[in-house]
Structures are given as structure tokens and as C-alpha cells.
Image 1 (cartoon, rainbow, N blue to C red):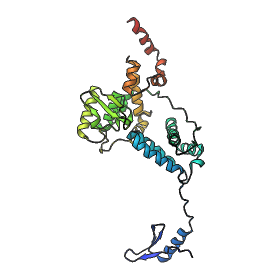
Image 2: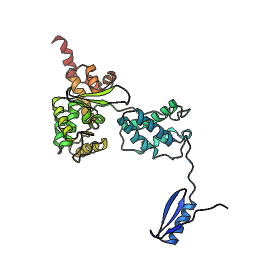
Image 3: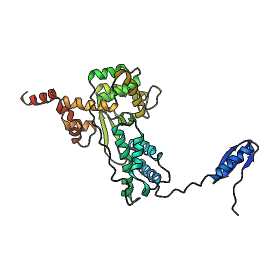
Length: 330
């Protein structure tokens, strides 16, 4: 006859327990209530064993590979999105059962996401299964044909007056420093939020940030004199770890920065972002006459054609075009 575990009482704790599949369950101090809880536990269906082709295991394998072979920021980027995705699916869901609608339902449930966030979410899941197919974990990519929404164009340019209004709303030096360095260098948020003192080259007035483990290419951010003053001060304050932190000494996160800008929305009537400041920096550089190849290098674009794709708004500025046209005869 099959043997079933029975509840047992621990006098020192005054509690009833039962051990099921190697795990002890606290049933409480009352015997009658404990046996009721025990029978309820026993009536639950046994969990299905997880198959090797479960979606969650493929995602775990990808994240382990990403942690070993990609930059820390890249790993965190995928980790945040993929963990959010797997929470919305059945843990026993297999790759063969995965359909594009599983991903689409997750994205559609996030009504607070902008178009770019929705695109990035879908891209993160698609990357997992493209990688799994490349590595031989799966034969067929179940979401290969799923389309991503078009990315929104970065058209928000912050004027000098708007930037001054933003700074006027900030009461602490920590956030002011982050805004000022972004405005002056055009760095990406993931660069300013992660840069450490050891990555600052004071002699050449720049940051040198490793991008991919094991590869020689680095992201180089050059600092203006004003940005240099801020960075040196923050390096002295935080010699290890990220140098840009909030007033509590905690490293900034994208969510925390987003919350700060959101608080300004009521007063300023416009939602700003660090990316808007970066986009503005690139626009200012181009308008000042710096050649596009140099701007692309300073901005960290590997492909200079990115500027033509995302900064076409300059062609709609007649004053800018007129100034450029006059340069030949100047």
C-alpha cells in the first residue's frame, strides 16, 4: 500500500508540520485546523515536471550566456525585460507551445509603455529564441515571424530656455549634476548611470567604458571643462562604484530618473528625459557645423548613417540649411 506523509507536532514550537517532497509545511498550532490544511495540501494536483524545452529554461540559458558574454548593462537590459515576460506565462509552457500571442499579450498588458518600450520588449524575447536556434537548443524559432512595432523618432529637442526651466525645478545637486553632464557630453543614460571613477581618464578628459567582455572596443565619452569639474567632484565623493548617485548615495536607475522627470510634468507640462538631452546635444553639434562623422563618433554611433535616419528634422529648419549653404561663399 502507498505510504502518505502524516502531520507531526513540534512541542518546542507548538506547531504542526507535514513534510511533502522534501519541504516542511507549517500547518499552525491547532490540531484540527492543521489536519484540515493537511488534507487541502494533499488534494492539490502534483506539479508537472518541467521539461528541458520549457520556455523559462531557455530564457535562463540565454541570460547565463548573456551574463558571461555581454556587457553588464546589456545583461541587465535583457534581465529586466525577460523576467517580466516569464512571469506572465505558465512555467510548464514549452517552446513548441509558445506562440506570438503569448508575447503580444504581455506587451499589451503594459498600457503605460511607450512605443519604444513595446518594441524593445518584443525584441528581447525574439533575441532569446534566435539565439537558441543558433546554438542548437531548438530546431524552429516559434516567434521568428513576429513583427516589432516601428520605433518612434527622437524628435524632442530641448531649447536653452527649457533646459533652464528644468534645472530651476531641481532642488538637489545630485540630479543637477546628472543633467548637466548629459547636456554637456551627449552620453547615453546607461553610460552616465554606470560610469565609475576607474573608467574616467582625467589626462585625456574622457570616459573609457568597456562595452563587450573580451572585445577591445570601448565606448569613449569626451567631457567639456564644465563636465570635468562635476565628474572630478563626484569621483572624490564616490571612488568606487557608480559616481552619479542620488542624495542618499544610491546609484541612479532608469526608473528613478524617470520618476524625477515625471514629477516635473505638472509644472513644465512636458515630459523630458535624459535621452531628450542626448538628442538635443547631437542636434546642437550638427547645427554648430561639426561634421556628421565626428558627431557620430562622439555620440558612440558605429554607423554614421544613424544620424541621417534619426536627425532628418534638421532638413526642416530653413535657417540651418541657409547657414550651411552660405558657408561656401563665406
